[in-house]
Length: 417
Image (cartoon, rainbow, N blue to C red; front, side, top):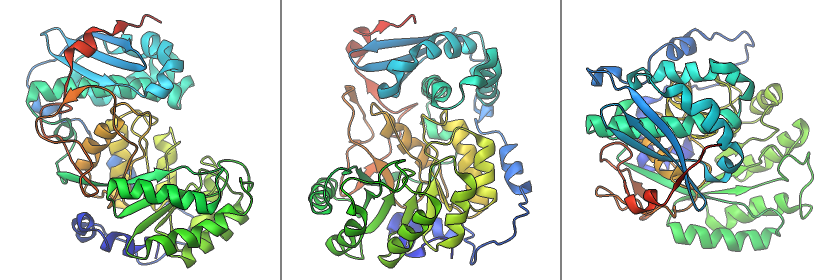
């Protein structure tokens, strides 16, 4: 069985997912993939243009900066406004692409055409040459601001602009990066984070992140896997993230140890662009293989899903270019009975974008990644936006659902590139 059903049966939020998903009962051995169902999903529009009877012409797209925060502000010719906060850890390197390549493309365009605009900015001035997060983080930054503006115009949360709302709350897990520490030190740190979140799930790191079987300290992973399960017991959902640490044979060997201790998924067992090897790991193991954090290509996701190389898809909200493209990945996964557990990055308001995206997914996994709170000052009338007993309530107000402190934005300066 490709999916670990215990993982989903153990979580109350996942029960509706299980009733809906047509999980496969066996692995597919044929190597002649049929993509017709996936292509049908890719051809469907995502943004609900029909909500807006009149054009919404984008007058300006600005990138602002205050301290370490990069803020995108979009305004329409009719005075509507939307705000996003970018992937702050990367935008310091990427702001010239945001300002020179991405923002100008949207000016003068009808925001109702968001699906085609996301395709268009990829082609404009050969932007496709920057594919990966160099292009897609700026595109996501602009898209999030546009969705915030359009949600405010329609008086709807941004999730309702590209999907139906399936989840008003999202259960979360915390990832723990304790590489460089002993197994015993790692466990103490993991215990602390789990206690703070109150979550019934966690993710820990194995291997040495793209180090081809080397790790620090040596032997840490083989000690840590049984120790994590012993410490937290079999009622805890536990995910393992390799970050592409292993060659094929070693990935399979470590995967069998993870299976022995009933770990719930195995993320990026080999380097993220080793597509054939990812499929070979999945074929060799019964544990669900997860991946997609680093993937920039819709076509490659199509291959990974169509060839059953991934059993769980993890597009990153920023690295993959926003909600429109990520929704297409989630839809392809859904028709093959695979859950979507998006990756989030960049601090800022990344976890808020994750909440809105997950709220629309009929094939959402039971737990989703949370990396901590933002230092952006805001109010949210419809949610505390805090982890409470392992769960966060999705904001239901217009657009992003937040009121970012206007004084904070007023202090920001326009980035000119």
